[in-house]
Image (cartoon, rainbow, N blue to C red; front, side):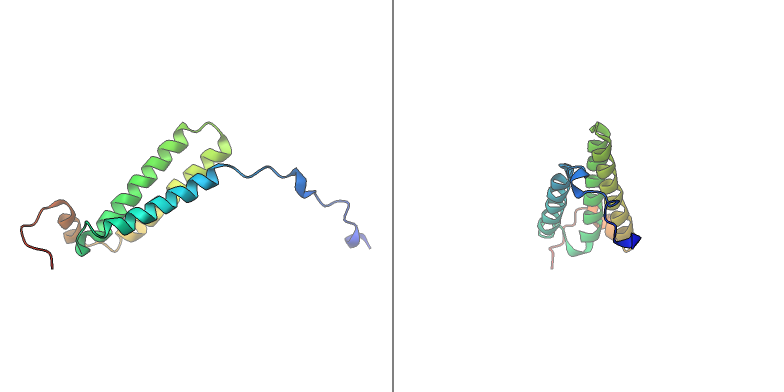
Length: 114
C-alpha cells in the first residue's frame, strides 16, 4: 500500500508567490489589442496587415527593452518570453503580406479611399 502513502507529496504552501509581471503582461496585451482595433480606422484596408506587424514588432522591442532593464531573473524571463511571442506572431503575419501592401503603408495617395 505504498501508493496510498501521501507523506512524500510536497505541500502546496511552499510554492513561490505569483510574479507581479503577469498583470503587466495582460495589460500590455490588452493595450496592443485595443491599438490594433483603433488602427483600423486610420489605415486603409490594404495597409492594415503591415501596420499591425509594425505595431507587433514595436511592442516586442519595447518588451525586450523592459526585460533588459529588469533585474529579477524570473520576471526577466517572463518579459523575454512575451517579446519572443510577439515577434513570432509578427513574423507569422508578415508571411501573408505582399510587397505592394508595404509600399501603401508609407506612401500618401491623392486618391480618395473607397
